[in-house]
Image 1 (cartoon, helix red, strand yellow):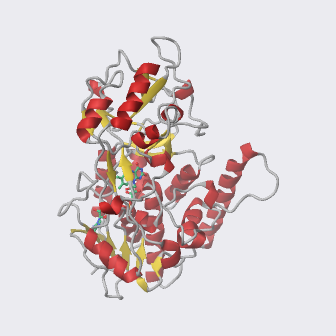
Image 2: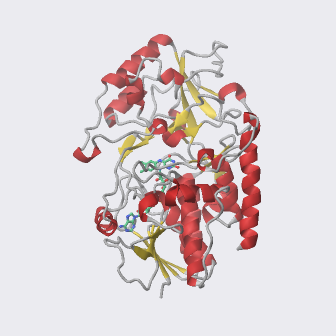
Image 3: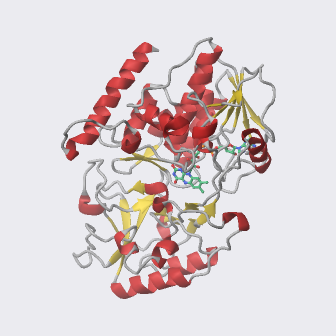
Length: 459
Ligand code: FAD
């Protein structure tokens, strides 16, 4: 019989299951895909990546998510282990072959002798308080369970937009027109250049070597393209989607276009540091594509999340120089995101205050992104394992990336204005005293390493 019931086999549920199983705890992992799909997932593999294939920066010295990677590796994360095995070139970022990655997670987690993977949709929070539960059903939590969560928490889950960028078949890109280059031909500095292009979820371009395919535009083409975005037919909003705020880093491309003619040229279509080999100069504007799978056959359009209608996307994106004959493996789209008001509802170890046998993990807690979701899954699994062993796992110190993220979710954030958050140095206790700005990131990460080592020794 299961000692812990995990609902949802995404990034968080898979990691939580792994941590528990490794601690010798029997897990029932309920995953509905295989029986019922979600609007964004395409497979029934565990830990499927629904949009970008990037885990963002892997720089543990200068970047908060890179630091989180390192901390998760140190704690035996299955998500990080599988990502490392299936990584594809992406400069200083960690990007993965999505199919290889998810297949590896499935094999490891479902193949663990302590894990029973059950393909089932769970429609209500389990009432039996004798079995601890971890809810990790993510941004696309099935409706009935969401209702049940709403009933238990006394608050409605929030819904807002997320966005998918289109993916293009590499062999349909005209390389007579496009060229391989990263901005400034930069090496793996891990630094985010000011104003570097942002793709879905605020991921920055890694600025490395020749990792990007660039499609150049002249002024006339750019102006026509921006007008096309503004005029293009969009998908209709549903009633519940209205008045929903966008993330700055995940804003549909046409919404950026509406903000002003120059907005895209200063955002995802920024040409600086990109030399068109046909002219030896920076073009007026550029569209960048980044490798999306290990084979290098699929490339995603960086920052091109959109709510344009599919036919409109195909028509308009084929006006981009070099993409005249592009075939799209996936077109852009919009999805909802479900999350609870964690600072108000959860205690310091992610338990629902009103029903302490239930923990939440992953994006439904209001963290943001693959890595963060897996990190919160890791913590939920470890907290539950410690509890079953009769102890209490103290939360990781707030100076660590894990602790900073957890602290934000379980109390650091304002409950009234709680919004999903990526890990960032703004969540860490500030470095006091006078420091050079250039040194500050490394001071955060050095302090974090020390704090994590101390915590690991103590536990
Ligand atoms: P998920 O990975 O979604 O896993 C939840 C699982 O629970 C799913 O497998 C689902 O099938 C299952 N489930 C749901 N309800 C039930 C039920 N009632 N019973 C049983 N099983 C159930 N993050 C990034 O870092 N980069 C991106 O580019 C990015 N793009 C995104 C684009 C879209 C459209 C969306 C929706 C999200 C995106 N995210 C992105 C966020 C990303 O989905 C999450 O960060 C991550 O997948 C969350 O992990 P999770 O484990 O919390 O949820």
